[in-house]
Image 1 (cartoon, one colour):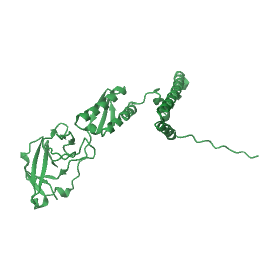
Image 2 (tube, one colour):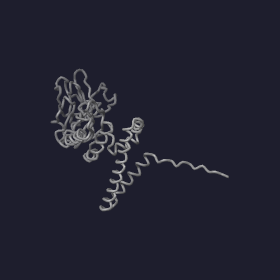
Image 3 (cartoon, helix red, strand yellow):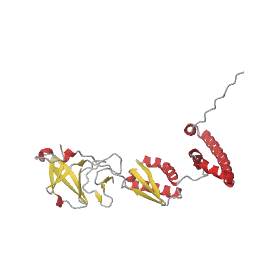
Image 4 (cartoon, helix red, strand yellow):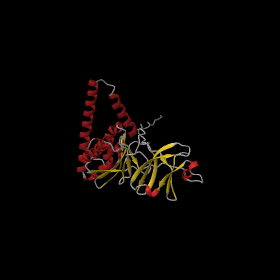
Length: 296
C-alpha cells in the first residue's frame, strides 16, 4: 500500500497580496459609476467587519496577562503592524505616519513640479527638505510649503512644528586647468574685471566683458562674504538678466527678479527647479585683480 504526502501549499507573500489589492482597486476605475459605487461599498463593508474582528481580538489579548506578550510580539511583525495601522487600531510611529501624510500630498506637489522628503523628527519638530517648485521664492512655492506644514501638524499628533532645511547645493565642477592663468591670459579667454577691492561685499556686480577677439559677455560677480563667484548674466529659466537679482546674504541665495527662481549664490544651483543651473565661469584673483574666463 502506497501513501502519498501532500505538499504544503505555499502561502502568498505580502507583496503578492498587496498586488492583488492594487489590481482590484485599479480595476474599479474601469467600472461605470453605479457599479463602482456598489464595489466601493462592498469594500468598505468588508473592511468594517475585519476591523471589528481585529478590535475584538486585540482587546481580548490585552486583557489576558498570558496573551499580552504574544500580542506585543505580533504587533512587532511588519505585516501585522501594517494591517492594524491600516484599520486605525494601532498608531504608526511618527516617522511612518509622517511619510504616509506626505505621500497623500505628494501628488499635489508633483502637479506643480515640486516634491518633499522627511529628514528626521526631533522633539516634536519635523525637518523636511523641499525640492523643485516647493523650494522656490514665489508665492506658489509658499503655498505648497504651507500645504506640507499644515498636513503634518494637523494629521500627525507627534508633530507640532515643521522646519524646512535648505537643499545641499551641488556645485558646478570646473576643471583645474581652466583656472590656470598663463603668460598670455587674454589669449586664453581671461578678461580682467578689476581690483577685488572694488567689488562691494555681500552684493552682486553686473558687468560686460570684452575678449581680445571682440566678443562681449554679460557677467555677474557675486561677492558673498568676500567669496567671489562669476556667472553668465542670464537666468536659467528664460535667460533674462540678473542685474537686479536679490542677494539674500543670510541664506546664501540669489533670486531672479523676473519670475522668482532661486539659486545657491555660491554654486549657481537652482533651488526652484532640479537640474537647472546658472552657467558658472572660472574666476581667479591674481595680484589683487579679478579675472574671469569667458571663453576657451
